[in-house]
Image (tube, rainbow, N blue to C red; front, side, top):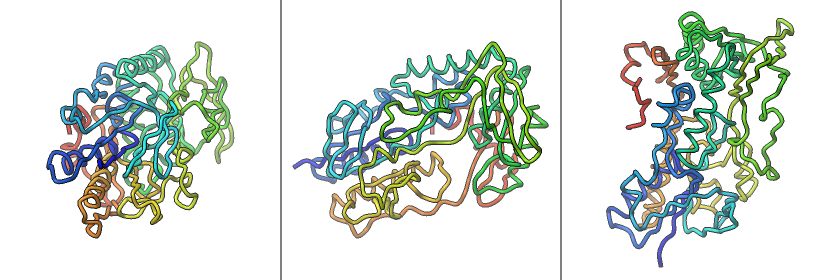
Length: 390
């Protein structure tokens, strides 16, 4: 009887899981008959690392999408690519939006996290993705005063890419904390980011101020994603532009005040797809799926289900590299269990905090190994294609 492995979700984690399953179980011919199904709402891989630059440079953005038909090993007859939206994950099957059910012997959940448009991409095809990029680009190009709300990694890079490509525009980055970049990073790194943004790129920083009201609001401000929601965040815009002024009401320790903008782009984090997971409450929360170091779900009754990438409730910085490595671990462990070596499962390490911020094409900052790297040390990791060919 054939073994059916389903990978729910593509991109960094899902695609890498399929690649390692293919090389270990199919290309090596070491395993019995195995069928692998990749379920993804897109028809290709999207290099999300470059999304902010893709918005300000659509000609660059079109390179970020690689159709699955362009990946030779995905064309193997034992691999099926099913373009569909996952509606639910159950102990023995996944349910698609069409109502179809896919049963599995092993499952890897790689659904990631969601962001609001235009950072989040709802596009099912490369053509639709390019249209989304051009629509966001047009709003930025038309505006004179642009406000980016939220100075996490995405907000920082978004503001920097806008200012780098449109140096004559007024760009303001608003953040509720006194320093940018939440997370397990040093203040030395944060101060370096402030210096680059403020003194080198000439971005106006408004720190320690929270946006408490916006008129007109963007769609995401009234959005609630739960089991009743029918529209995913990627189809909900966090961007608004208007010929008339957009008014932002700010509040902080220094009091309250207002600012005006022609275009506002809110970059306020991610949403987890936990409500799609019809699994025991003890292994699913708003933080994601609880997994063992083997990346199996933390319940012995579900040892055939693995999870990797951003959907996991693990205390690590959400990075593409971490997702890809964890996909390798999950795929290797499924292969070993199929080939009769369940006692030799790999364990995923607790990765130390690491981040590389690309602020336009000329500026960057990196922290790894618990220290801020010099520009000379960092420069070899700053690539023109933002690592797509890797």
